[in-house]
Length: 314
Length: 305
Image (cartoon, rainbow over all chains, first blue to last red; front, side, top):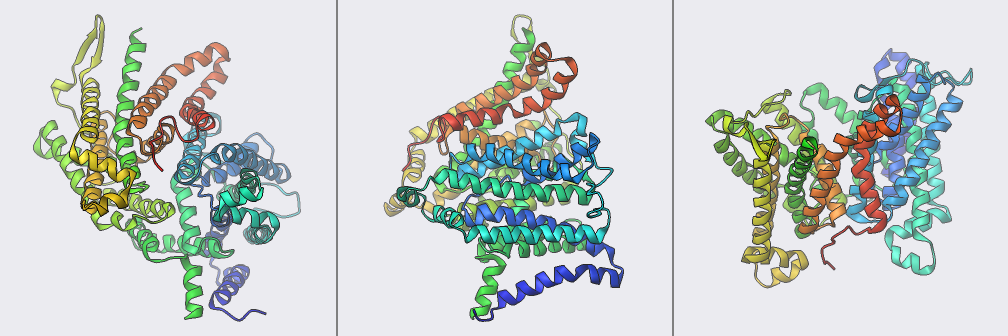
């Protein structure tokens, strides 16, 4: 057994806190905190999926919010057309995200470094404009979803607590999957490609194919987060995939600690709570948030998990 | 015919504006290896400065000149206080830090100028239509943008290719350590280049201001277009940026103007009017995808490494 560390203790506390949150909400009658944390958990899933390609795969996608939108629009558009069953909506959302990721990934992976950042950004922005142009589905104003995905008796998404646990289960499932991927042969190859692509290719691994599969898995997972997010807000609009949202996701990953399993969850919790807290103090919260990001980048290497790790050692 | 000429010139004008923005971005990237997302914020600040100074002085030209100086100073201050510390770090750090700067600038503008947009009215002599061909008139102001931007592009070319500073800039782009070792004050050079890039972005912003409203976030959409241009043209290449900018400006403008009509001839009316806005906004990204498939390093890659 490995020794006790500060980061492990914080992780366990965080996860236990999330599991017990509805209990606290019921006892204190504080419904807002449940809604807030449902959102946090969904975005944590999105951040975790981004971390899979960014932290472990070294692929700096600046367009990850596109999948949030695609997953959301799949649910919204199907609901609009009268298909209310979650058994259809969710698979469609996942498939649509996977296909988008496959096309975008195949094109973007022809480049690397800064080009990759810019291109994923540009393609996500394209998705944003296309959604803005969909007059039938609300265009710029977005699309209201009048009925949440229907899982006929299995689980009721209209129930706050049930929906919270569904999102939490998706998050835990996502992290478990990432953990399995990262420790599999496939995951090791992808991580090897991050460190030295030429060497891996020389050994005989088809680099782009491995990276593309990883990219598609990540996009699909983020599409699931998008479908959940649309159900959470009962609304989907192009703003979900605006590029600042992609930036937010990146910040969550970096803030929490890139390339760690729990880091993105930690980052999402801290980032969104900070946003909530600052916006209650002042309307101009971004005036503080912006420079804060700059400082975190300049001085906070390794994010929260990195700092906890250092605290544990020192 | 009239419409075609007019849209062609609009495309050229938009393309040249995009070039001013992309040139600064590609210079800063080529020389300092810095990805600056906040470049669009400098564009926005140029427009806000121009609107404010023009209202103070009552003169459009004076306001524009003061705005140009102000953006240059802002760029220099930004470089010295924040961005200088990012050189040599990971590109991801650049993206995050400058993303933070965008949040800061947007919020600062909202605090100072309020959430509503500003207007920058044109003086009377710039609003008259000018005859360019027999029977075809074009707004004087848009024509002025084309002339000014072409002039700046020429000056930039001469400055980079023919002057001593330009030589240092080119040397810095090809080997940073070496020109530092040769006794050139590289820090000063970097600050200068960043200020120049900021001024170019400010110029683009203040020239665009009378055509669109001056508003928060105006720099963000155009920044992404500038990225597309850099990717198409090849990072670090000013010539590539120029050609790609004109190309993208044309395709975007002409696509938006004529695609709906073209589609209407192929598809039914309802389908065409649904597909046209989505398709015309996709055009340049499709173009980028094609360029990437054919030449992943861009059409005119700078000779580096």
